[in-house]
Image 1 (tube, rainbow, N blue to C red):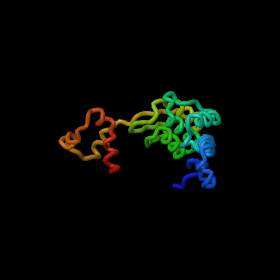
Image 2 (image 1 turned 90 degrees about the horizontal axis):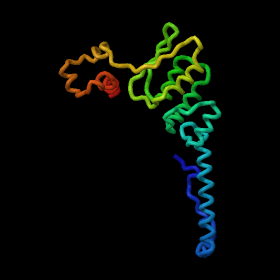
Image 3 (image 1 turned 30 degrees about the horizontal axis):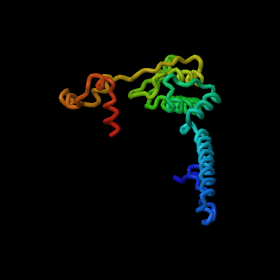
Image 4 (image 1 turned 60 degrees about the horizontal axis):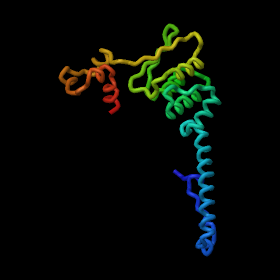
Length: 195
């Protein structure tokens, strides 16, 4: 990837004629100039990075949250805040199940399954969600979905049907060396189908 001008270190001395570069006074001036230029270039890089939700720093995240009227997640990590900003930007209409799934997956960081039945939107996921606090996600979802839908987010534990589909004997299952929690969570099934 091409390096931007603000990512290159400043070198004031290289702009001067050779005989001036040897003078101690010019070297002192150049050191002061380079220090100031580096500070300004760093600020320019920060401003450029804060224009995009995936590269914002703490200051940029606060600005995006203020513009989008968001509250920071309770765990408050920078990555959680970035994910929340991306999810909010992705939530602009028109909203259908596919775009809603993208918003939820962007926020949680894991694939989700969704089903709408009897005015209940059921969202299930398997894996380790990056977000422990789902309150900001629910706030975003309730801004997107119709007011008559209720929302339920739950972990999808392993079912007997999924286990039967694997066509494993008890000995083959024991060979996998899974703890009871690993077995119930079912992530080992999705890991095998991915490979």
